[in-house]
Every structure is written in structure tokens, then in C-alpha cells.
Image (tube, rainbow, N blue to C red; front, side, top):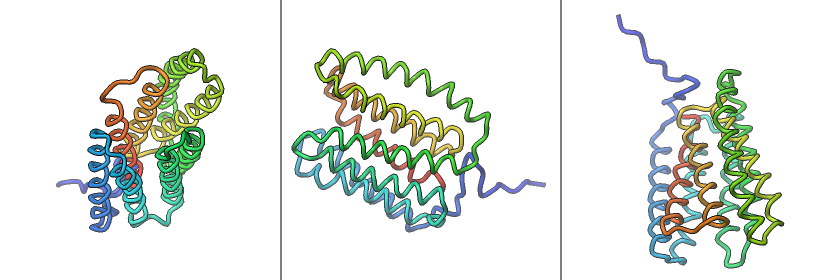
Length: 228
């Protein structure tokens, strides 16, 4: 006698929510994401200005199209993606709008964290999240704060440290209550932001701009689908 495979679990999620509409929006978001990666690689700003926000809009539409979008966790996730879109716009502006962009993404991380914490949080997974994320965050914070301080931009130390605390809380929340897809999304978001800080404050490398966008879009996909 074969045991039925559950259609929902706190780790895997609910495959009934993966409707054709969700798939269509996810494909559209992926197309614009790939277009943005190409635009960043060839430094075609006009194309990037179109593809980057539209990719985020695609992931936002994906989250809205999920059949349980009226649930509390998914509502918070949709709000988070709206603030990600706002952050994208700030960081694309010709003038330096790093701090407003950082603030927008900080609010997005808080909303993601609330969404994840309204899922099936367990104390064991919370402890595991703290053990994994806290040491990584401390290591990165020390690295970035040192570089910021020596670069003559000490006014950015506090905003960056606060943001790192917020995204660390989001990552811990993902491990504590998220699905595998949601946890992966949180991990890629942390990686993407670490690459941004590495490029901006420590050392620029040729592959970083594309790497930042690839990890960012994978993160948005994971977090948008985190309740599927």
C-alpha cells in the first residue's frame, strides 16, 4: 500500500498554488530578468531601465497570482515586493540615491520577515537559523564597516549596519518558518546584498554587476514562490 504524497508541508509548500497564471507571470519575470542581466553585462543603461523594474513587476504579479495571495503571509510578501520595486527605482536613478534605496529594501526585508514568521515557525529551526546567519552577518559587517570607515564615508556605517541586521533577521525568519524555496530566496538575497556592499565598499570586480542581478532575481523568485 502506497502512502499519499501530501500536497502541502511546512518545508515544501502547497503545489496546488502553482497555477498556469503563476507560471506565465514567472516566465515573463524570468525573461525580463535575463534581459536585465544582458543589459548590465553590455552596459546598456536604457535597456536596463526597462528590464530591471519590469522583472520585479513580474515577480510581484507572480506573488499576487498565487491562489492564496489573500492569506496574511502572502499579503506581507506582496507588500515587500512593492518596496523592492521602489528600491530598484531609487538605485537606478542617475543621481546617487543609495540611502533611499537602502531604506526601501530595509522595509522590504521587514515585510518578508513578518511574512515568514507568520508561517510554521519552530524553535528548533529558529535556533538553526541563528547559528547559521549570525556568524555570517558579524563577519560581513566587520568587513564592510572597516572598508566604509577607511573610505571616508563614515555617514554610511549606521545605515549599512542597520540594514544588515534587518536582512539577517529576514534570513533567520526564512529558516525558522519558510519553505525550502523561501529559504533559498532569502539566502540569495543575502548573497546579492553582500555582493553590492563588496563592490561598493571593498573591491570592484568585473563579474559583480551581473552576479548581483542574477542572485537578486533568483532571490525574488524564491521569496515570491515561498508559499507555493
